[in-house]
Length: 95
Image 1 (cartoon, rainbow, N blue to C red):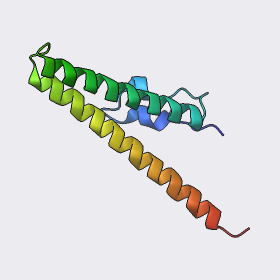
Image 2 (spheres, rainbow, N blue to C red):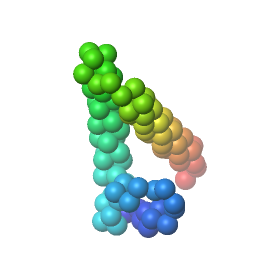
Image 3 (cartoon, rainbow, N blue to C red):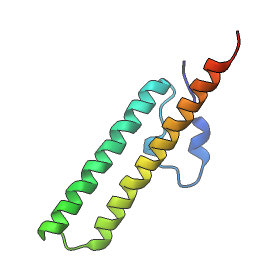
């Protein structure tokens, strides 16, 4: 199953690097999103650890990095919830 995300290219503020090419499956897009969210979590942890160790003096950047990772994780959890909800709805359908 292929999903087209062309409509996302016209939304203001949508990063163009996150829009999937037409030839990727939903599973590929989901896997990349999970990996991206994991990378953001790791980056936030490293930034916080560097700040605590005194190697980083810009608190604003630390907070922005942590908030970006938090929002990415919240979005991923909501997508997962919608996928599970859709699966449950399909499993309740009578054939």
